[in-house]
Length: 138
Image 1 (spheres, rainbow, N blue to C red):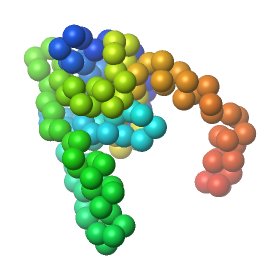
Image 2: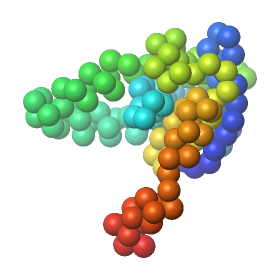
Image 3: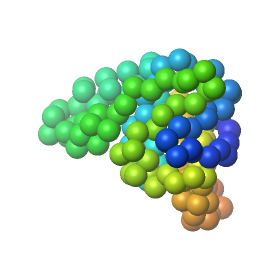
Image 4: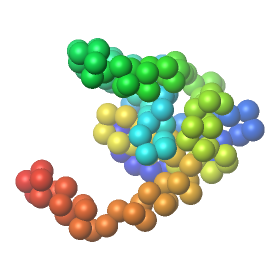
């Protein structure tokens, strides 16, 4: 998944998922809490991989991850207009009010409050990107 898309979330908590991401997420997908104040959106097979990796860890190391990701996870699907309902507890966690940015991040999508996404991007420096690319051998 890749790309950045801006949409609005309606008063009922419904969010339009761009066609490009709908194709990759499939008919059924999982929305849960993410890191940095966003929501993670996984296709069913990607969710299964995450679940398996967390379950493979000893409970002493995985219980916080289990509680964070699994307790907030919700099974989602699209309505006939390409929208999905984002539950109130997840909207509150991510601070989703009206303006929302959905980004593709390889094996998952992320849902951000647009102002929070802009602030996050303002903190990224060329140096931090260069350091990360160097670690990857670029």
